[in-house]
Length: 213
Ligand code: TMP
Image 1: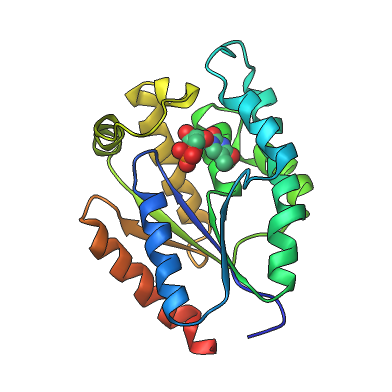
Image 2: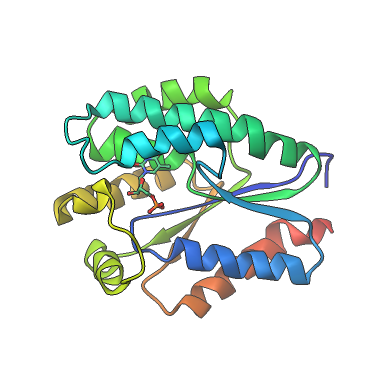
């Protein structure tokens, strides 16, 4: 592999099991002595955490869609600068739960701001840094939302209050993004038991990344 580590992101609708799968993939990399960093925006970075708390505050019902998109891009920029870029430069594999694709899909497509417009502000925020590999966990929105409802431990945020139609748009948006970048994005059927999703991810990692170690 080159000097920089691999940048891998996980994407999916709400309740697609991303976070669980991410933990399993991390365990796999650990077992293979592959140095890695697991993170998610805002990643414990103080500035980015503060930005995110403004976005997710249930009382902020007046938040304009452009404001939301800009705040996500701002938090992303800070997390990238403080966490992701330094780790990649050290040669760590970085596994990130959600990245630019989430904004393209949620803000650009589902909220109707336009995928190209949202890509514009994110290109500025990220300096054009894109993942080397992205796993998209595809799930029927009904199944994803039922999983969230069954998960008592998770806090309900402003975005969970969206209706089914919004989540269907999110899925549609992801499928469009996948079409536009099929080499980078690997689609996984996340409606299956989690161990099968994990097996697919491990197989892809072996083919695409671990061969370099
Ligand atoms: P999470 O459930 O994966 O923590 O994500 C929180 C919510 O934030 C989820 O509904 C997706 C949304 N989101 C966006 O709308 N745009 C973004 O850029 C990101 C990163 C998340």
